[in-house]
Length: 483
Image (cartoon, rainbow, N blue to C red; front, top):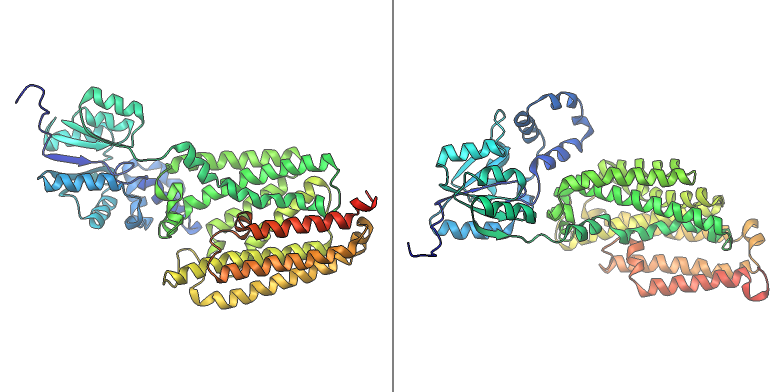
């Protein structure tokens, strides 16, 4: 061999699965899929007594994980296919259970041999390294991995392919063997985590300030401060619930053209990070609620949101009523925090308003389904033929909310708080116009998000809101000396 020539790499390439060939952990995914159904919870107390390999066998046999939708590392697969054409032999060497490995290979049709955990032996780290050295000979195989436990395997390998590994891991690999190739195409974890928190959805939590506005108490600084704490409590708990929702909806999200890009579904974030952050955010939300004496409202929101994520979203009509209730809970939270409680008429208005908005959201999803020439989608109780009845229900709720607002405007409490309450009739027209425009946008296929998030990006919605604000200011009587 000429001086400085690169040594010939081993003929056999052994490829790790979790975190390497797929941008996720199949054991964690299997557990999440299994635990999503409460009927599976019986007998779980015995699972920690099992060995790691036995646990993997239990999860693999009972979770019904859809292996075709996993976030596969495309750059690595392209590399492996090119190496296979060059005559190299590909082996899937994984600590995952054999059933999972077989399913992955059945989908990819890529590997010549499979070495995996078998319910008795857990092939991870040192155990996998020794097994591969025994099977192929020390230094006679290339190992493709991504994490610290893989260092024990790379010590037996003739070369390495490093995939999306921490920089310190990559540096350490170079000290123990020849690095044949590096693949690193994951985005920043900080950016991905921020995306998973969905801060744009926090806009819905401005509903906590509504009781202060309707009570004409704009100068009550203490009420604004407490409502702001309530706003933060809802923001962090909502983000926790979004993470939990994403963790329990992985397969459904991956089958969706837009949701498949979510950080956990795409593999941009490890599932374990979500399992860590979700409870921390929930605790923070409850603590903030305790600070203003509204922890029970936060707890109610969390319980209903989790019930929705785990099961209620699959039940037709129950799902939209639950969504409407979750909107209403935000208003209740603002009332509890600010001590400005809402009249029965205003509660009726907000209930029908939120039912209409929740139905808009679901109809938008179904219309998108129909455009993709599909009838049903995972974890939803509807099909495309249900659009007409949902539209009827939703439009009816929207018009009923306008009627309830009209009755609220005629109430004695409004007459006592506003100098010119007759001007508030313009608000009825504006609210109804905004809702009708939401329905028109949905029918035309423009409603891809939650309607409140959609409104935040819509200039007509902003103009409508600004006009409504002017109406309330004039009705209050700021320009006629009434304060």
